[in-house]
Length: 237
Ligand SMILES: Cc1cc2nc3c(=O)[nH]c(=O)nc-3n(C[C@H](O)[C@H](O)[C@H](O)COP(=O)(O)OP(=O)(O)OC[C@H]3O[C@@H](n4cnc5c(N)ncnc54)[C@H](O)[C@@H]3O)c2cc1C
Image (cartoon, rainbow, N blue to C red):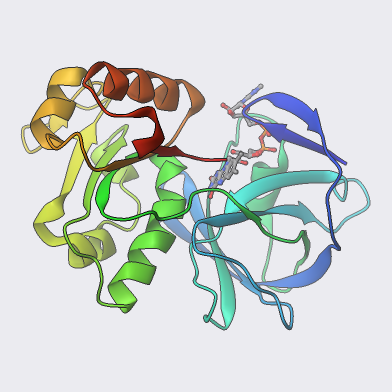
């Protein structure tokens, strides 16, 4: 089976079975993201922060699996994913955006990506917020959101995913950054060490980082430069 991660083709052996599931809902979240609600196979278990691969169950698309993080929680009756659509080329997400309820999808067994290890700073870029949405929902439902802080960077204000819910869960502890839109209400531009020193000053805490590959690499380098221990930096595995 071939998956394509950020433009690279990777051949993988998918462990375990694929489940055939129905699409229940497809809704717009931001201009280029959609919320997919899928039926949950009986007995399907996954951890908070996990991902699974999805393929469209049509002969020409069945082999094209793509990984997405669950934003739903294990006890929910349905599975939820938030997916960025790339309309400019003939990939899976462009097809996903065209599906109608009742369409058939294939879902692999889940695999772990980001695991919560304790309070800290969460630094997300774009759809890199998805595993953090699951973690914040878990903490929020359990009454454990504590002093966790989210630094969330998106291109423009319209690209902020689930803003109302993030504000409700995190209150004052969410800071938005717009990388491509000058806007007086927000810091604009790329995250730099000064920004991190100001908004994430306690280098002894956990730092969770998720987003485009180059952003994760740059932030990890900056955090180490600022004195964060490498094993306090949690990234997707
Ligand atoms: C563990 C994991 C979890 C993930 N979770 C999520 C998630 O929850 N939500 C989410 O939205 N994404 C997530 N992703 C990313 C997601 O898997 C990819 O965005 C998806 O595979 C894109 O599929 P595609 O077939 O549409 O595009 P692909 O064909 O796989 O290509 C996607 C890449 O191609 C680039 N591209 C765009 N246009 C073109 C073009 N014309 N020609 C060539 N390249 C182009 C894009 O920049 C993009 O990086 C996750 C990735 C990983 C590894």
